[in-house]
Amino acid sequence: MGLQAFTHIERNVAAIRKRIAAAANRVGRDPSDIELIAITKSVGPSQVEALYACGVRAFGENRLPGVPEKQTRAPRDFAEWHMVGNLQRRKAREVVGLFDWVDSIDRLKLAETLQRRCEEHDRQLRVLLEVNVSGESTKHGLVPGKVEGVLAAIRSLDRLSVEGVMTMAPLADEPEDVRPVFARLRELAEDLGLPERSMGMSNDFEVAIEEGATQVRIGTALFR
Image (cartoon, rainbow, N blue to C red):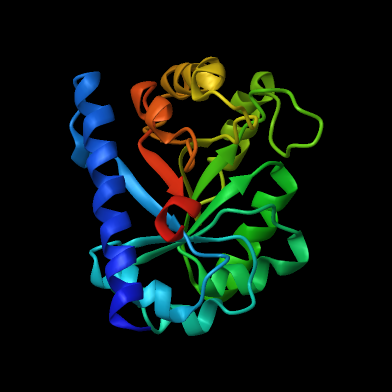
């Protein structure tokens, strides 16, 4: 990667962090409580290396090809890797070997499969329960009313640590339009005593932070 491209990413990271801080300050939150997860599915190892050089330490991918090479630029001893996409059970073995988090648990059978693969590899996984707050038929995730029961069952799986919940808000021209989705996820997390709330992407993360996001998933805004 050339110096100009690196500088462009460096500038974008700084701008995103400034916006995160501003959104947090507006509602009296500590900006350090919000983690930037860089979604690197559409870029290569050199961009991952640039992000790492800028201090980014959490990376998200939704598919497996290319991840091992990217991890040579942001090693797991110093960075965390999140599987953020819908996960097929047959991919569980590979995911357990490559990722520290699975942010898209949307059914008990998937959790049980991950438990078995973790036992085989002597691994632990941190996980988030994906919740379809908006009720869109095109989105994956648990119905909000079923989260408590699934959570109780997964807590019996000793290789998985349920850290919180995540949701994908509907695409909207105005970020304000999806504020109720973020508010509902925060309320659900609070009711369940879960600390992590992964919500908000490049187009709406500031509203998500105002509504309590602890993790924001930023891709496009880091590279455009």
